[in-house]
Length: 494
Image (cartoon, one colour):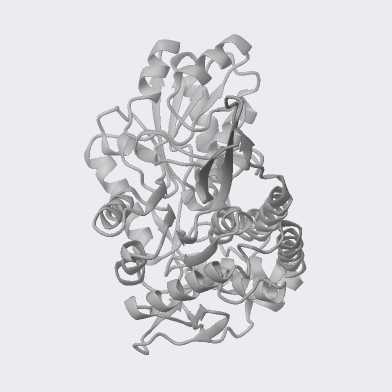
């Protein structure tokens, strides 16, 4: 990752982008398009097509046709595996291009995007390529004279709606296992970050994925996303995003064909520090980056910091010093530690959350203001609040920005009570030197992921999913394949 290479890519002209339907780049049927505004400096990069219901229908028809024709769904598993491996190779060979393109679109600091976007996506496609020929059916333990077979079959047409914070990483989490299972896919990226996924789709075609197996529809959630969620020929919808939108998608499914809907809806994740943590300095650094990286725009961000009272003041001061020292700036500068907020709209939401927290009595220790390290861009100083009580909005509502709420606790029982005092249940962390306590906390915390003496880092081999209002189903690991496969029983009298 060299600065001169990044600088050479950052100024490349980006052509206006069409939809990808049945292997062809096409304009929206309405002719409408949307500007792509970079949060780095507020400049318009290009436009993307604004799809409507007609375009969505064309994409779904293409996916259905390829699925029924079997050009992918009935291709030999070994051949599908080869193509998915070639996709991973294409991503790796275009690593710098994809990373810089994504940062220009959504503002993630390049040091993080380099690894978390194309680096992660390539690994995900490679992982699921290796899964293709390892999905087996079953033989049931039946009485003599009867044979019970359990077949695993592709679901059909999969719709995937992915967010703007890590489009390549999260997109790959859905596209790769869906393709590995033999499905055809219609992908709807966020209108705030579509460019890297459009480029990925082209790389998939270049790697030999048959046209129509992966289609990309860009546009607003209210129009393109709604049409996809309500389409009668979509068999399954996988979504990562906000709770309110997740509810709308469930409603759309109920009012259309009852398609399966899998949701990952974020959280208000507790990061719990006990006084027996082995290295408070290390815990403070990791905890700070667990909320401030990517300007807090991370689904699993540790946005509630629970600290045992005996080390509260020392630990909070350590986190404050780190927050103050973080370099917020141009996300395409390799020395930048915190990049841009994804849009002016998101920045305004973050600032409003800071204002509400102050009005409700929380104490702002540092940060919380808009910055302008690059003229015209959207940036924010990492904010740290203490004096937060469990009833405050900052302790209960996801901000999705670089805003950290600190709450003290006295003992393990209170830590568990505070940790679980939320409607969410996506991620969490425990810092302790006691193995027994670590195991007790893993059992007690209601969350899909519990980190111990770290925050972040689980790779593709383990599942990511939430409980409560953080959603259902799982991305990552072999368990993600379960979403994209149907079980069929054959009961045979011999």
